Image 1 (cartoon, one colour):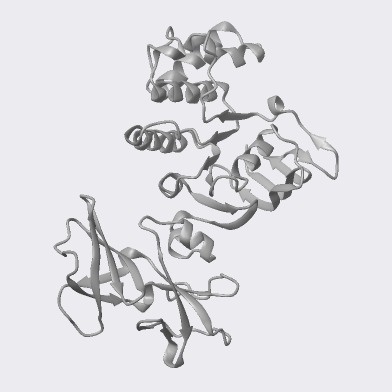
Image 2: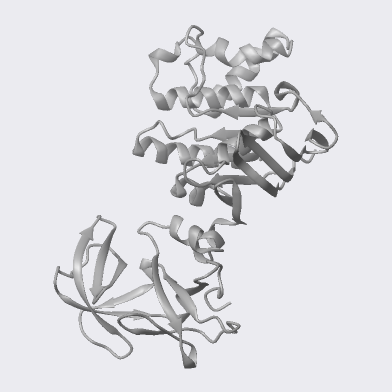
Length: 365
């Protein structure tokens, strides 16, 4: 049975604040959609509306072939009848119950037989590699282990849809990385339609089949991770995604498809820019070629700062009032205050209308 989720014109207000503003999107059957954005952008509120934990003020939500919410039709199915499983940021385990009871509690409410409950409990613990933890209390486990138990509880319930609200934010960096791999594998093996909330772009880019970027309750872009990264729909998305962050430079379109910046010019691909004059050029740090000697087509800069990080090095390059982040793989041989020469490939540039902030070109597409 298909568990496609369709959200139409969803709106949720808290007093005068519009937390979710007329959002429409579709999560295809078996997809992993991440709701991404800064704190207060409405991503958790949207998830809670899908779960039935918040009643929206307008719009519709379909889960599979079931209309679970409709403002116009006065429909709002309770959370327990939506057949959704949710994992929270704080795990939400019962502290006075051992692992086995934490997992089977919801199954008892479903009035499943004891043998079936025990079977599901053991299968779900095996799925998250927590066999043998049935007799532990939550306080006797680490944060990562508690998170796995919360996942096991959801799996035992066998919901149609997985909903996850920043489940890894309380874990340390190494454990977060391990759990990302486990969650991605879990999604792959289960094939469950999943909505995942995070403010961590690395989680979104590495785990998702699609990403919905939100800002102040408004959906900014809905695309696969590679398009979100390479072709941000507007300046907000471009600036939010990427580490080191994208270089955004104000410029003016000139003849011959050049962009005149304050300290130099950059050639761009031929475009039909509809008489747009003021633009912002976006350049990813890894798309700038760096040389320690002048070669044709390069522009001279100074290495203002060099920041090695083992696998790669970020170099802050300066020319006049212009400052750029440049990324090199490995440990760079560049030294601070050394002259360097940078080259910009027109095929790796995005241009934005400075007035609207919207994308004009898409890296030569």
